Length: 304
Image 1 (spheres, rainbow, N blue to C red):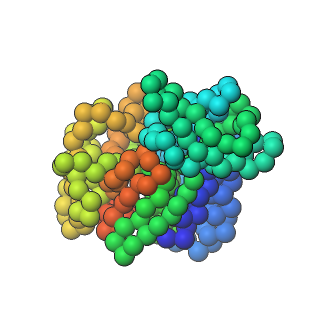
Image 2 (spheres, rainbow, N blue to C red):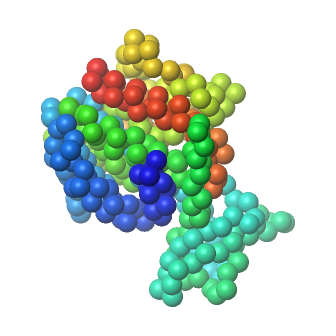
């Protein structure tokens, strides 16, 4: 879990992914020599802060977004949300501006619900703030801010160790409207002819998806993936014997939304572990579901 903790401790809210991109590129450079297949690494200004890793002769792409929710300092001591973070008075927030490191406290106006902060000085407007990381684990669970989606990033990196054929794509901006997957999908489709994807992200514990019973294969959220593709994934999952659950929701979205709205004929399916305490500093995931998620991705990327 050392890698997962390092990922969770790196602030990278939507729009400020560059530090995490640099971390990932350094990690890939250091560890790729020990992977089964050496990937071609695509990164740089053409891809903004995104990264594409191409292994062998790819048939399927795995999309894992690297950004998180957070807050932006507005005027005075006001804050505005990045994405959809939970906001409870007393949450510890951290950041950095030209005057130095910041560790402040979230405030919520009881009458208006307006968000603000308490700190020893005014923070420069436009400064991004994120939840302070308190990474904890037991024999059965992991708890931290930003398991959504640092756990998806962790899964994708671990997948790289044994992947022979496939694309691993680290995208940005997912938590705040998206925007990068469309140009990534276009490049991948035109360069490699790949048009099927797995969305490596974290979903919710609900009345129908339970912690500790395996990662979730989503049959739908606010959008509906093509049924024939999802049925292929369900068949492979059943035959693998790996614990998994089926999710059906009427709201929410992921990188799959941009794939479906794009101009290319992409098939996609969300496959990810469920978490409790969504979008809070205390997101909670069962280790059995983490294990299930990684093993299922390894099988799916061989069989699809």
